Length: 125
Image (cartoon, rainbow, N blue to C red; front, side, top):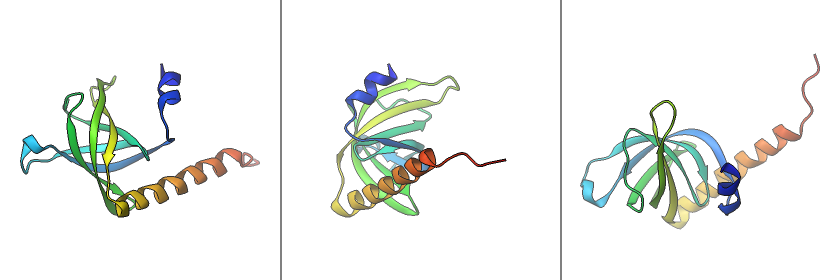
């Protein structure tokens, strides 16, 4: 199943643990704290304590390298993992140019670091 999801994605994701705040128009000023555990240019995977509802439009504020990135996103899927946390897959619907540029730069740097780490030889004892 993981292979099928990877084939459908347009952008690579990076693993991270970044704080995120989620809100919806129906919640008014209330926000929900979450963790962004995977992030890509097209969306990400959130870990939180409640289901939001597939298809719901949310606003997500992500702490990306000490700068906030705000996006309007759509909930694409949700499931409860083995530890009981709820994982929510989101797709970005809208992000202003400044936030989009910051997100792309951050992801590009992390992908480059991952590539270099994978291609470097293991340390000698």
